[in-house]
Length: 332
Image (cartoon, rainbow, N blue to C red; front, side, top):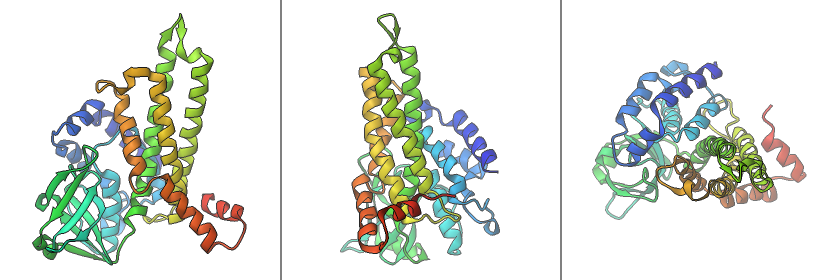
């Protein structure tokens, strides 16, 4: 069933999420037409249990789908929506139409809810905000929006009235871990996309009478690029290894640390092999390498998650380091 599901998503993205569509949304055009196609497909409810009208899939089963989101540079928060809807359904909250992203927020002196850097905040319809010991669902349309670092991200601020009227979800969710799980999977897809494009370019671009991929220096770069790409994909699978919609934090730490580490190396190697052409706006490579850099930081970079694994080893694990490694990476 998961192969059929991922094949259907792949076909939709191949037809509707072309580089031209990604560029137009990044340029300010509405993401609503693309989102409506996704909404009508039912893919956004994949993690929602069957009792509430979803497909009842687990994180392990949707990993290939989240990987595709990175491979096609999907410019809407579909992975976040899938996870948020599952959490809302579990809490008995009516699922809203539209896309949902995740954020950690705070309340300022005026009582307004402030989220400094909301991933996909420019294109999302709702934000599931963690505030202390609770979560609230807030509409983006009621927020004051400011640009953030990445073109699709935003700083959002809601007035106190919006907080009073918001639907409340009991309990707090670890937004950083949820985001890290999502972006590790999407990084795996983006890394694979960059690798495939770079390999194709090396085989097609000729210099001194033969493809540049025939030169030993380029072959060495491609081998290192391949090593990082496939190791990161295996780590991302570990991060999504769960029978439910809730990831395991230690597994996520392994996944995000490895994929974030690979993002820097793969972006640098791919641009090195492409030369100056890889940086140009007209060339598709930059759609993916920019996301490698942005997603590397989303949910915490490799240094943050390395410290999580180290803390687990030092403070909470009494056996051998190898035993912890086996526990965290066993996905059978």
